Image (cartoon, rainbow, N blue to C red; front, top):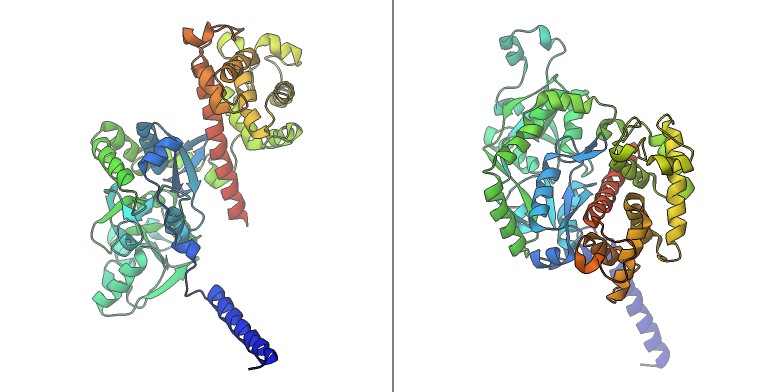
Length: 487
């Protein structure tokens, strides 16, 4: 074969290889290596990192912000477990239920807490803890328009009341949910077709229930614990028709996270026996009065999208100091719970809780408006930021130094930075400086020659910074979710 022929032949082989490569890359039937990746990360790594990452639904019972506070059954239960481990909890709102096991196995989270039913199919991909709850699957249907005027018998007669009644009905569910295979099995059991319409992974169980209530669809399937809570919000729906046996609801973990799974199981076994667990369950699944009060409140972010009465003012003035408005909001909540009339210890006042002497320097007092307080607060924060800029170059790290200084004064924080430098630790990292500030009530440190400002209950300030940064993350979660909902 000539050189020219060989070149021509090689060219054809290359084109054939390229075509096959493009086909493989574009084919949806062939999962990518990225999707199949299962990282190894178990309890020891989580404890070492100091953080537990959890995928959680942003919904009425799981996780939400109410009057500035993160709440929810899954959130509070995860928080208790994280405290048991002695680590921080990072909540990651689920944007697409169809992707949660991929994200879990890739290491984007350590746990999924999303009212998940244990199924044999799911156990092929991930592991489950022991059950958190036991529930059933129910049909969610709409009552007739005049249901309030009907007798109990007439109302019951107007509704589907047997699985046999599902024949030829159209029911909307997510394909990746446990409801889809249950409906397929039920169709076989009743010997008649059920028209199953599937929805995208972005469509949550609660959104489907809302669609039934608002006449956009006729039927969906839901877990009974969620459906009964939804009935409080939408009394025109019915969730009395049970279509399954008891279902185990549990947290999901990676198949190779044996130590984490066992740790959760041991902790759950003990915690579920406590009065605190029963109170937590009742708080979210039995207290109708509190639920109605919450969902109708203007600062229930799941419905209103608002954190506080001052969101617009906070957005306006946070930009002047180049802070995310959610961060400034988290600070204001920590100081005053968004109450401009609050008078604190030592006479501190207003949204930003200025002490009288400091307030006078910035032109505010107990009679000043909320906006005046925010303006004065941002000016003081800017001053602190300028003070720390030569000492902490990274703006993200510097925020924590500024927050600590806002709480306890910059002198004690500079002391902690000098101690970090003395012990050969990076003085520009908050985790290092925060350690010495946290321990500044220890004679070993507050009597050190590097310390200029003496004794300090620095652990209070350390927690202050941690709580604000944690709340900041929750507020960002809320605003991202609202932006996704609007789009």
